[in-house]
Amino acid sequence: MSLTLRSIFLVVLFTATATSEGRVEGLGVARRFISQKYMFSMAVPVGWGVSTGLDTPVFFYAPSSGRFVQDSIPPGGAVITVESHDTVSGQRKSGTTPEAWARVDTRAVASSVPSIEPFEFPKESEISHAVICSYDEPTFSPAERKQHSVAIFWAFSQRMFSAHLNYNAGDPNATALENVFLQIVRSVRPLKKH
Image (cartoon, rainbow, N blue to C red; front, side, top):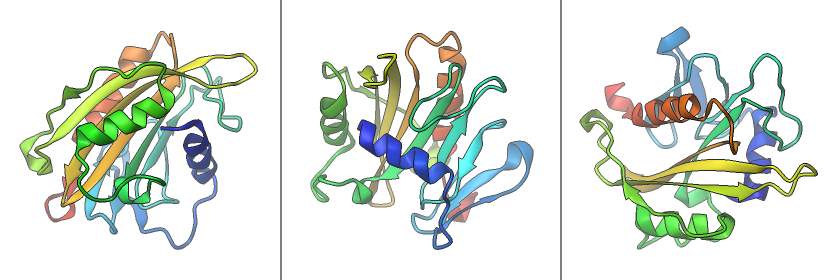
């Protein structure tokens, strides 16, 4: 995910529009983001914020000692963005596979193209084709920190989607953040089955 796109998503976190088809239902561990446009739901991580300003979710986490400033993720914090292929500028809309999208996406931001591996979703998700990759990317911030990104690309209901987890490279909570990300992405369900 490009730095510019990430900046746009972070602005959306705080400026939800009234025309959005995204909403959150439930409480606590039962909270789910509902996308009417794309006809799926996805769990909201406990303790994370969620933006309903788009038709796909943006989740954000900052420890009590940190906060988001512009596009800078605080130490210990993270952002999970989910997007549909049809909303990504410059992407071919037909003939694309999760692998092809992953290659194009990572080529734009990673210093080298990372390995792209198969990723499995539970049968209830109705997703049978997905891939995962991870890489570090520069942020061009004054501190010149790198961010680590874990990205999953999948096909669902004749559309393509991706989810990106971004956090500061070298974060001691990296394993916990990645576990939350994997659980949340695997929680995708068609609306008829949630």
